[in-house]
Image (tube, rainbow, N blue to C red):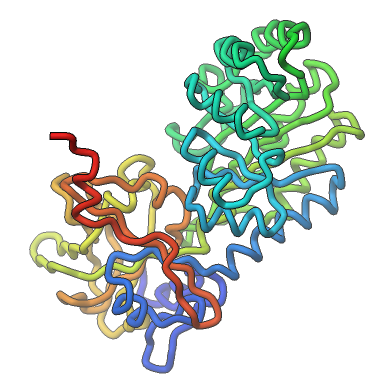
Length: 421
């Protein structure tokens, strides 16, 4: 990467981010050095206004194309109670993928009737939680889901998840709509389960669900996933999933929300009943670029490869190790130089795969520097872990120059709290 490209680094950070007169990164009106001093490092900083703006954009753009519709935030992308609360306050429903996400959604004040429960292996406990809290829709992934729902003794509205046979251009680990996916049912199997549900005394068959994957950077797979639903008949509700990609690096060119919905709703108008209620489930594209992670450099080791090690790593960002996701980074206060050297940014964990950014130009990295990585709002918080006794990092909301802690850093006591001996 040429030095001239570094002038665009700021564009990868949350909208509205600027460089102060001394070159300091400012996110949500808050200086990165002040955030590090107040909350320590690593720290995950969310520009709250960006989060809210994106939620409104999705809601308004969908309603303009299909008024009888609903946006539900795919909580698994960032299942922090404060993030879920923002989505609920902005009029969105929530898509949850397990018992914990049900409980945080309820705590966040979400309307249970606007919550959609997913999962390919829902437990008895999770089914019971969904029914107990009055979750609006349960997406049936298999016949065992039906068995469990029928034993609750309650009436429940359900959707059936369909495998559309669409293979999107994305990492294999985040493909979900291809033949052989672990999620959902092939159309012939789905048809048989739909018939069973329609005769169930406890379940109400409301419609169908489809999802083709994550971090998808073109619109065609979304449109292609709609027609297979039409072959199964007409229903009240069609949940068309999520999966729109986000911009992590300069080479990423995700479609706009408007372009994505033009393609998706265009296909819906062609194939689905005009009276149907449509649901979409944006996740990554909703939160990814609303956040950045600030680290401190702990070691610089120059040799055949220059390794810049920071005080976090795969404990707070598993995207690189799991999905080979590319990130970018900059030394806070020196985004624009002077002298750049190409380095590999690594974490503190005892794994060679603990690499945050490989081959990134940084300006004279030194121990004690702050390093900022943009586009960490999706799947970083949710996949945080305690590897090597790592304490999970805090989440801070920044807006209008004010910062507030919404998730505290784990303590040493937290790490040992579950020990019984």
